Length: 202
Image (cartoon, rainbow, N blue to C red):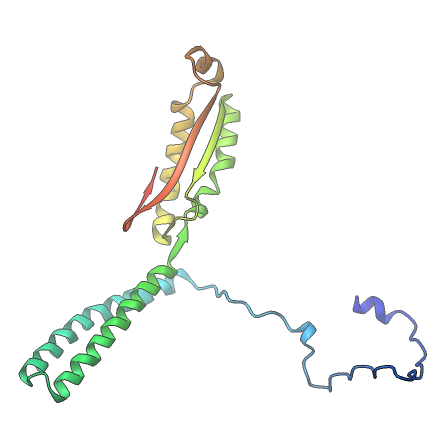
């Protein structure tokens, strides 16, 4: 738009009419025009190896946190829970709380929705059904259930194998299904659900 406007002939300046508001002042040179300032992003791309390294460091921190707690308790008992012993124990407890929150945060960063796996299956099932001459409906549930990325990387291929087996051996051709009193279209249900600290894929 700016390029197109610059190609037009400049209009002759007109004197301001009585009572008219003065034109807005132009921003002085060196001042950013907010119209062209890009919006700040709230996302940062991080290499997964860096998250692994961070998680290992947090693991070491948890180990030494436990040792510090033991030392702090022993010192507080020797000093009768007074003075430096009490202060040390209080500081150790705060460090322990921060370390636990840090561990939870790092673990949460590593989590991704299983949608990253499930998204490959609609096309896969459609292509396999066409090849096998079968009618198949794929139902996906729990796509926003979150799983550690390391697990997502590992379970993709086994799930593909299981879905292939479902198409090949679990669902009959339409004619055979009708003869057996079934609907001509078979169904594959792929679901993910959270059960306590476990993610169940069905």
